Length: 103
Image (cartoon, rainbow, N blue to C red):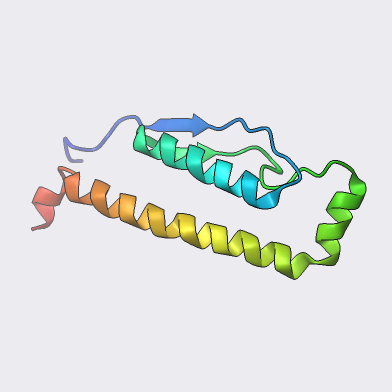
C-alpha cells in the first residue's frame, strides 16, 4: 500500500430549507455542493426531497402529472453538476501525489 493513500476524508451533510420552486432548490443545492467540494468534501449528503417540497399535496400532484418535464429539469441540473464534478475531479487527480507512480 502506498504511503500516499489517505486514511481519512471529509464528508459534508447539507441542510436546506426547500421550497415549492424546483429550480431555486436545485440552484441552492448546486451552490452548497460546490462550496463543500471546494472545502475538501469527498462525499456530500443532501436531505431527502431537497429538490422539491410543495406547499400542499396539490403542488406535488402537479409535478406528478407533468413528470417528464420535472424529470428533464432534474437531469439537466444533474448533468451540469456532473460536468463541474468532472472538472474538479480532473484538478484533484492532477494534484494527487500518487500520479508520480503512474508516469
